[in-house]
Each structure stands twice: as C-alpha cells, then as structure tokens.
Image (cartoon, rainbow, N blue to C red; front, side, top):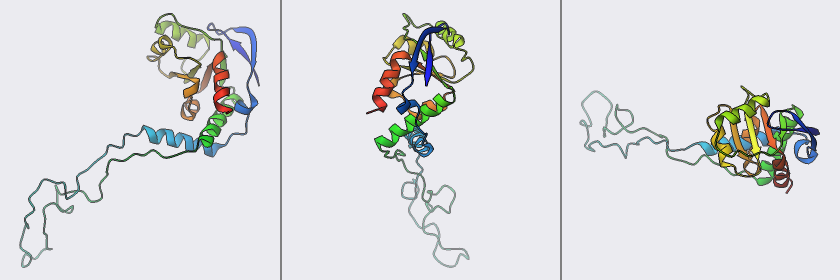
Length: 209
C-alpha cells in the first residue's frame, strides 16, 4: 500500500512511502490481538485488594457463649464469618494478574492490528518534525491540520522528543509513543495512527525480526 507523506500543515509533500506488506498487509489474527490486549490490561491492574480473614480480625478469642442450652447453634469465636464484623471467608488477597505471552504472538498481534488500521485507512504518514519548545497550541494546530480533531490519534515517533510529549499530554484523545514502545492496545484504541516517516523504518525493524 502506498501513502502520501504529509507535512504539519496537512498538505502532501510530494513524497510517497510504501507500507511493508509483511507488517501492514498481513491477514489479521484476531485471537492474537485479543490475547495481547488482555495481557496489557492485566498488567495495568495493581492487584492490591485485600480483606481480613478470621485469623486477622482484632477480636477476643474467648468462646462467646456456652456450648449447650442456648437454643441456638453453637459458636466458638466472634471472628467467624457468620457474625457481623467477623473475618471474611475466602476474601481477596494481593496478587499479580499478569501472565506470560510468547514474543511471536505479541509480534503477530501488533502486525495484525497495524494491518487492520492500514486496511481501514487509519494510517497517516507525517514527515519528521521537531518542536523547539513545549507548545500545546502548536500541537493542537497540527492535529487540526491533519483533520483529526475529536478523534483518537496515536502519534508514533522514532526518537524521544520531550517537547512533543509535553505539548501533547494535555490534549485529549491524543498520545505520543516511540515506535519501539508501540503496543497492540494503543493501536486498536486509536482511530488514526499518525506515523512519522522515520518511525516506519523503526516499526519494520522491530516487527520483522
């Protein structure tokens, strides 16, 4: 697939780039996308939930009433889960929700996600640019020129640019990531991928290993 390279004014520069068919043109594997997104979301969970069980509740351990003659069920501890204020039975414990996913599956998922976006005309190629200083207004103007106002846009760069990140972090529905840190969730969550020209080579290099 051939795409025109745009400048920050949203105009065609006259250059064209060819998207690698081994990265942007494969038959999508939806199950790999599901697994990769599931792992990403699982890794975001803190897993710090905790409730006290009967051994951890700070109550007396004495027998609360005599064994027989009360006309009610026998009870040996106020800490029992059946009493108000007692410990919780089988309560949540701190845990790690992450799970292992093979590198080849993750790579296939990212290529599948990129292929879906390319097929749906959800990829724009932007010529490389820099920002001399953090200017949110300038970044918003670029987004407007690319006709992406109100859309979820993922800007992919090849090198870290602190000024670009600072300029974009207060703009809703936009995110700036490095090509080496591109993940399936961000790709699928975005309406449009804005890929800087040099970032295409970095994406191809990472995903064609």
